Length: 112
Length: 112
Image (cartoon, rainbow over all chains, first blue to last red; front, top):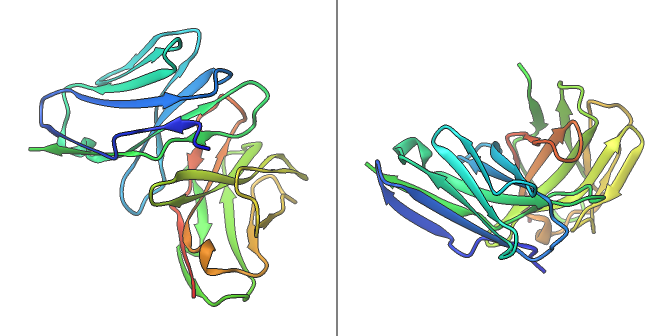
């Protein structure tokens, strides 16, 4: 059973606009969340993370928002750039768990 | 350069022929893991290792073996590969839980 879900397989956004990628989780024990970006023929690379004690974490053009009551997080990219076109994976882990649970990914296409 | 390397990058084999995919990291990470990526399923963890001689099952361990005799190496062994193990495999390492994982470039395996 998928504990981390990304319900949008793909998203297209115009260059310069905001990209919003969503992620839902079912396990209330998860307390650390990460976003990874993946280009074709490469391994995923870490983008940004957030601990459950926060509801927002920002790093340059990337901001992650966490809504614990809704078990939902989102990644905002603004402004979007063509180089942001990639597959984005949401991941989560919890206390005592030594494994990371990944979502199915969202393919973002930024149109020049 | 800090990196995770995997070999081979591409492999086509036949059912039942034992194979090993090597993984090595040069960051002195304690934690290493193997994932497989399949369409519509995202990344699923196969096995992980918290340190030398300490390994444990992830979500989809059936048909796989691992070993961790040295800190830097974490090979994935398929004793008798089957077509349902055709997938894209990633090795990853980190300093431990609640730390970003660094991924290798991936190994695309086809079992005929």
